[in-house]
Image (cartoon, rainbow, N blue to C red; front, top):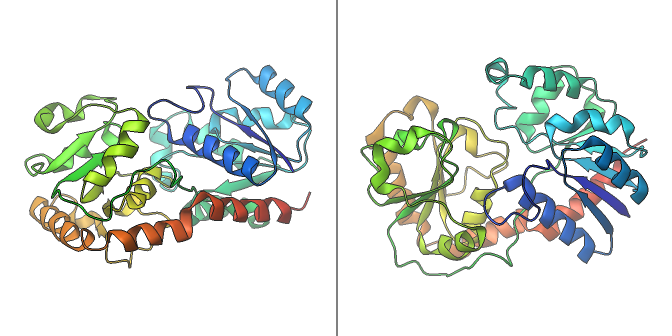
Length: 317
C-alpha cells in the first residue's frame, strides 16, 4: 500500500527535540516501511507543495496530521483519506471559543467529506455530538517506539519527572510548594515556571529524554487538556508509573495499580497530590517489568500500525 502522511511543516521530521506529532509521523512511517508499505512524508506549510508532492506520489491513502491544513485535502487526488486533530482541548468544547481560530477550524472538520481518525474515544464523542457521520469516525491512537527508550528493571531513585512544555495548559504551577523530589523538563512557552525555577532543569533533546527517563520512579502530568499524550507511553516504556489529571489519561487503563488519576475536585489539594505521587512511586518501583509489558501489549508501534492498516482497509470510498 502507498500511504502519504502530511505533517504540520513547523519543525523538521524527525524532530531533534520536542514535537510529539512529528515523532508520531516518523515512527508510523518507519513501522509501515518495515511492514512493506511505501510511505511519503510531506512536511511544509505551502499548500501547493503539499498537493504536488502527494498527487505525484499517487497514494492509496492520505493522512493529514494538522488541523490548520484541512483545506488542502480537497485538492488531493485520493478517495481514501483521513485527518487527525492533535489539538489539546479538542475534547473540551467549552474551551474552543477561547483559542481562536479553533471554532472556525472545528467547523471545517464537521464539513469535511473524508474520514476523521480520532486519538481517543472522548474525541470521537465530540465529533459525534456535533453531528459528524459516525460511520466516518475511527479510533486511531498513538504508539511508542520501544527501541529508542532505555529501560532498567530496577530504579535506585525516589524522584518523579514532569516532562512537558512549560505552559499554562500543562499546569506545572499546581505543584508549587510541593515540588521537592520532582524534576521539571520542557521548553518554556510562558512564565508559569518562574515561581519555582529551582526545580526546573531545562529542556532536553529527545535522545537525552529516552536515556534519562528510566532513572525516575514515576511521571507526573496534570494538564487541563490533552489528546493522547505520547510522554505517558514513553514513560511506561521506561518502567515508570503515572500520576495524571483526568484530562491526561486518554486510552490508558486507569484501573492499573501503577496509574493514578487526580480528580479535578482534588487538583488544588496539594497534600492529596503529594500523597498520591508518593504512593504511586512506592507501587510503581516494584512493578517496572509489568508496566513495560502493559504499554507494549497495547501501544507498541507494531501492534498499533497493524490496527492502523486494518482501519484503512475498512474505509468505504
